[in-house]
Length: 81
Image (cartoon, rainbow, N blue to C red; front, side, top):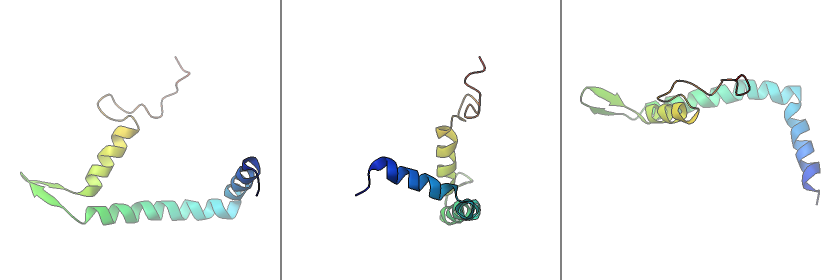
């Protein structure tokens, strides 16, 4: 059995291969769009608003990257101050 460093170096080399990068550039956005479409299909209406699982995921992702009450801080340069 290979050691962990050897396995990780092979994994890194595989993910840097140009073909793999091109596949990821097409495949990952397609999976994100497909997931968003599937999650937007079921809905619940309440008080004139329509709620979907996609909306819940969007708000969860928005708050997870720091874009909640205090504005988006996910891309700020931490070393700038």
